[in-house]
Length: 356
Image (cartoon, rainbow, N blue to C red; front, side):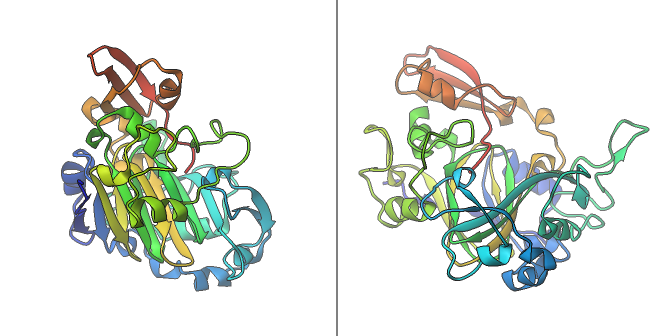
């Protein structure tokens, strides 16, 4: 069996923007970046559960995703509770997950309702220091005279997560940098180019039985959690693939993949449309997912080489199969070129995941 690969490791204190782009991002190579939290955020040490529980907003009653059986975070039922209650020792699987746009050290839209914990976290972005993601003095504030942003790097999407017994089932999306402030996570990543057929990627991401996103979810719940998935496919290295929908689907142990631990302070670069899954190894975990321009170090996705945004794949069956087409439906995020084993096929854009 192929077995797991060793993930590349870099030190955020010495990693340059050019190295980040040339060695990892453009090569579609995942990297575990040590000391990233402190390099990117001046207040990284504050984002522990004990500090967050001391913030007044922690006790505000808000709608928080809560559930013991739901596998996809976006599909989890919401319940009105405080963040302090969500992180409590008697509370089953619970996640504060909030995605919003940001520019510099503030939310991009003034009227957008953003959790105070996220606003406090943004205030610590080291915009006056050069990092592997941005240069000093680039604040992301629009410069009206030029009609553009003075900094393409410090603008993008900011996804806060404070998790109690959580994780993410296999899914994929454009480039992302996942920074962990507290706790420990186990990761599995699989590159699209390492899969023999596009159906293997569909099955790995459980597209038929547990689709990603609000628009695709079925009636009822996705009743497989990340902990159950890791137990079956990673710890037991199950080759029977009982959770996968297709009998022809390969087990994880038959695929080249990465399997590693992310500790407090580490960041993980998830390459373009790599399938990835996580499971919390501690309770709670606190982190942030940075996407869009900031994740590509200020090189907007549309300006990156087309080769970096095109995925050439082969279909085991009919490339025009409606289920396969629903997996590669139109958007501007990426471009799948799907070929049959005989050489004929389709070319279609693929949808970015709107949930995990």
